[in-house]
Image (cartoon, rainbow, N blue to C red; front, side, top):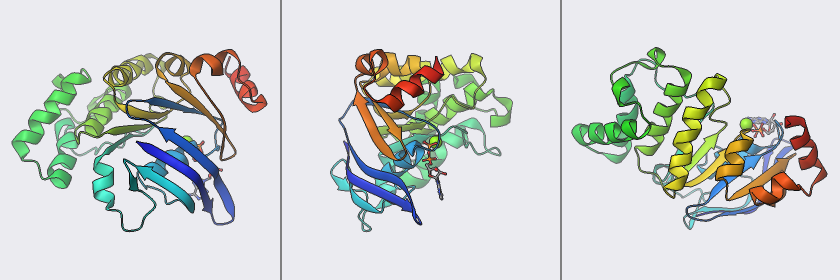
Length: 240
Ligand code: ADP
Ligand code: MG
């Protein structure tokens, strides 16, 4: 579903990604760990080309993401993304936040988009807030709306970039529960998170990044019981 082959990325002279090789299969949940500044967000953003790669090959569903001729709108329709800060439109009601992309990008009718939006709002447990504005919702509720918005274009892949990092602790669980349900349903997911419990329970694979490189790739059992890399050991010891 997603393949990085020897991907490098520079910001000017600064190499932010070095020789990234990664293969994510359909239905797999890959959790990306690593210290701040190690390139996790950049790697994730390359997948839907919010960032350009500098060299190497990156394919999503056999389509070359790094090809200038690739239709970005078509690519991004297959990929939902959820950010740390929910990035909802503050002046639009919850439901209108969700119907916007299907109407604009997919040409779905208003009625059908609303029906789909309600389906996903129910799925994330927040249908009663359809007509509220984002500011009237808690952080956890806003993030669940953001997930529903990502799902409403019926993507094949969901990318999550520290989706619970901006939340008060008591709201982390409700967002992780929605993500766990998605994973169980077979969604292909790449998740940057510091939630080790989630990684242990849900990840098929854990990758650990440091200074722009994937330095360890393992099952959660292997990674958490005996990380091979010293940098991974240090990272884990600091979290405990
Ligand atoms: P992470 O998500 O692991 O914290 P990032 O991918 O955000 O790491 O950043 C990796 C490195 O790239 C950091 O050193 C960061 O300062 C740098 N960086 C990120 N975005 C830019 C940018 N637009 N221009 C220059 N440097 C950047
Ligand atoms: Mg980041």
